[in-house]
Length: 211
View 1 (spheres, rainbow, N blue to C red):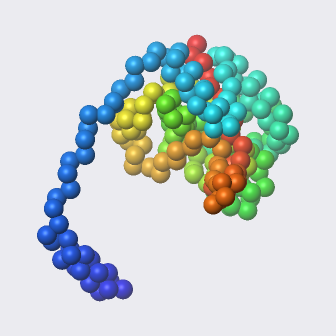
View 2 (tube, helix red, strand yellow):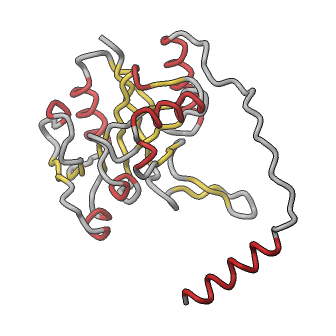
């Protein structure tokens, strides 16, 4: 197997020996946002709603109430959470199941999952998870049919370049990254929308306002 691999790579090298060098990628695109924190949050809210996700603005200190209401409205009894989820998010009335490397079969019988995130991007309405504190491993946000994600206003950046810079500064690019833009959805060749193929069909974003 190793010999075959080296043979293929050597043929590729010979084929590309006379190929011109790739040009430098232009770097004159807009890197930083200009919106105020309020406008940035509003843009993110609008883009999330455009993706047919449910977004809610939550006042500081009222997050536990919002979490309770979201799961109660959907009849979610068993909710998976990362082991290091914030203690105040573990509201009464919901049976929280700590993720102890649950199998995919076990996750498939979970009513929903509650996580935080690393950051969010206003221009694209995207949530970024990096398996950091309060986010858990990738499987728990892909298999259950309902994902409730808590985002603090301070975590919202305006542009994708800003997000990539911040991810690098946090060292998050060394971990698996999941970019979520709305509920999982795709379309077949006849443009019929199908939801839930690559992840949860239902996404609820709770945007916690700064105190």
